[in-house]
Structures are given as C-alpha cells and as structure tokens.
Image (tube, rainbow, N blue to C red; front, side):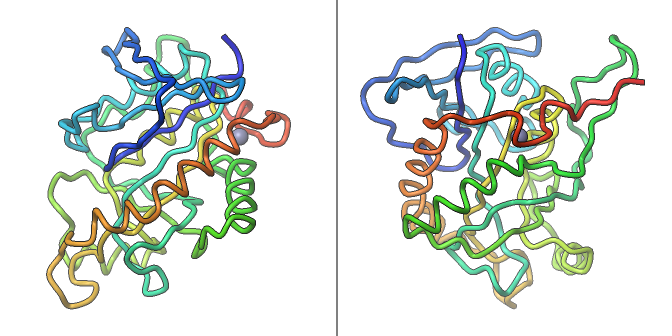
Length: 257
Ligand SMILES: [Zn+2]
C-alpha cells in the first residue's frame, strides 16, 4: 500500500464520516486499533492517541506501538493535534498554534526505536516537526479562515500530574510557549522512522499559576469543538494532495555510526 497518510488525535474524537473501517495492527510493541477512511483516492488512517475509548493516560501511552503501526501501514505523512496549556500571554483559550520545536521533560518513557540491536543510531532534531507540513498547514489556514496565532515551542512533561507554578515559570524562562504530556516521544519516533510529522496545538487551559487562577478545564470541550472540525478538514485536504518527500529532510534524519 502506498500513499497512506495519517491523522493522530488526542483529546476529543473526530467525526470522520461513513466510509470507514477499523483495523488492529499487531506490532512487536503491542496491538494498535486504527480507523481507516477512504477519502477521494487516498487512504487516511485515524489513530486515537489515548486509545479508542480515551482510557490510556499520557504517561502510559504505547508510543512505540502507535508509531510502528503507522509505519507498518505504509504511512508517509502524519498530522497530529495536541491539546495544550498556554504559558505565553499571546496564546489564549481556544487559540490554534503550530508546534515548531519541543523541550523534553519526560522521565520514564520508551522514547526510541534505536535500542542498539542494529548498531548505534542518532536522529537529527534540527527540524523535529516537518517543515513542509508546517508550511502547508500555515498556508491552508491563511486561505481558509483558520486563525493560527503563531509558532509555539512545546514542553512535554511526564504527567499525569500537572506542573507546579514554579515549574511553569521555569519552562517559560527556558523558551516554551505551551505545555502538554503527549508530544514526546511521538514526534521523535516519527522522525526515527522517516515519517513526516507535524503537530497543531489547541490551547485548552492556562498552565498552573500562569494567570493567578486555579487550573480549569471548563473550556476544554468548547475550545476543541470550535477548532477540531476546521483543523481536521484542513489536515484531510492537505494530506489528499501530492506531497513530495524531497521538499523536506525527514527521510534523511537518521545518522548511523
Ligand atoms: Zn517532512
């Protein structure tokens, strides 16, 4: 199978129409359930990061199984949505941002496929999020009334606890704009597999202590609902077009020693 693209969703399930079938992919890391949709002449795989019933907490997601399953299906390009807390005054509730870099403060995750069995390998992180997919989303958004507030650096924490107010202050000082618990190692594993990967963030809350108010998620459903349909249809439209791997360096990011 060729020309297969994927959309990874987090919080919130997508309404993806009727021409859908489900498949369970058996990987060496575990089984992964996906929905596959025929759209135009393309197949688009939908993967729910937390499992179909949203039952897996962020620190226990089997990231390696998820990304390996996409690879085994022949997926070449992935768009993901991430629900994030804001630690930047410019990004408020419900805003849409394009993630362009990350900081990793996770602690206890299987975060690589490179376990030494095939020699020593490293992966280049100078452009962790596929530049070509980022530019295409930005252009599409500009032409279709999706208000992208800008690029954002994502800090990934281990969870499931939220961050302390002091941690949030520190992350802001280090240059982060938004905080979440799921984008690492997902983005790294995609790059190890040579898959183009881009993530779009939706702000669902202010991070701890950032606005001198308690962390609240009263807006989480409203924020997601407002934007998820527009973002999903943007993903589908872009992924349904011809995408050229030569326009980015994602397929050549692994360095073997
Ligand atoms: Zn790429």
